[in-house]
Image 1 (cartoon, rainbow, N blue to C red):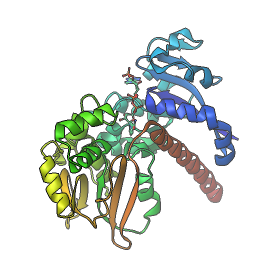
Image 2 (image 1 turned 180 degrees about the vertical axis):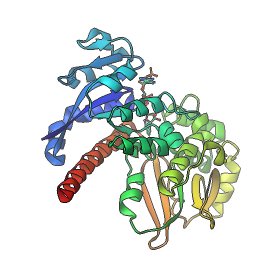
Image 3 (image 1 turned 60 degrees about the vertical axis):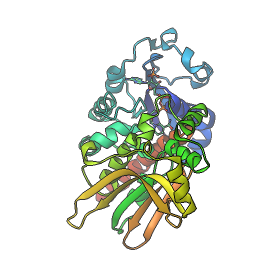
Image 4 (image 1 turned 90 degrees about the vertical axis):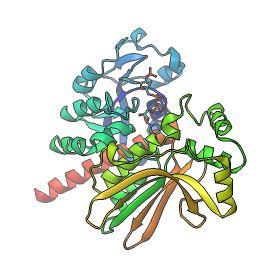
Length: 355
Ligand SMILES: NC(=O)c1ccc[n+]([C@@H]2O[C@H](COP(=O)([O-])OP(=O)(O)OC[C@H]3O[C@@H](n4cnc5c(N)ncnc54)[C@H](OP(=O)(O)O)[C@@H]3O)[C@@H](O)[C@H]2O)c1
């Protein structure tokens, strides 16, 4: 059976959840999917690096609390996160990048992805930075090196938004994409509707673990801005930079505005949108919008997110599901690995046909 050896870069919520999935359901997944997964290296800022050519024994490693994990105490381990050495030189088939998202230049994740592709390794990432800021160049680098650059988890965790557009929309013309893509702002707007003030709604979201200690990226729309860039670039073929996407968050929305709108059947949502202009160029923005009740995104609330694609032959097609979550996002990585496996199978069939 085919086996893919993985190097996990960053061992926080998402990559740890992927390791749990492999440890707990690896045999079942192999039987169902026709390929096995083995982790041969892990690097992490806090835990260091671990390289085991014969496969990392995941169960004992996962039994250690995340904050106490120290690879330097393990065979094949070191206290340093030797990212470049591991990515370039450890013989892995796939590099799984899940370090932090840097919205300014995408680093160091962009370098991680580039090193892997240059070394002829496939990449799966959930990190919005490299995809939003350098997606086209990285995809081209992957093509030149005969490997795949997969990034389903960069928009709506494992909910298959990008793959639906790429795989299921053959022959359709997509004229616009719009989405409710941030669970935190969705939650806050919902609480404003039910009577809470803005500061109280943010505090509640923080207490429940929906919002970060610093909620700026969610509340001011910066997280959605990166997702809009990814959708515009990947689905509409644009090449937008951050400065091309005007961004207004929800911090200027008041509870009374939300309640007055609700009384008129309107729901405020933080909407990220991209649309093709008549001349073929693409315009995009992030802004709070009071949507009419019948709009496909009006009923999307709390942790559920959704993206609506406006097409010529099908009208509007909406994909909705979880927008975040460590397990949900680890599933995105699994779906990327399935895609890599399927592409390898297609290549073998094409070569056999040509030969
Ligand atoms: N969690 C979600 O629901 C979700 C959904 C969609 C997309 N994503 C994206 O997926 C990525 C991972 O998310 P997560 O929730 O797993 O984040 P996380 O829990 O913060 O994990 C990231 C891990 O990477 C480590 N790290 C940071 N910089 C590194 C470097 N240069 N080299 C090696 N390790 C490094 C961090 O170490 P320290 O903690 O010491 O910094 C941390 O352990 C992020 O880009 C995130 O935006 C997450």
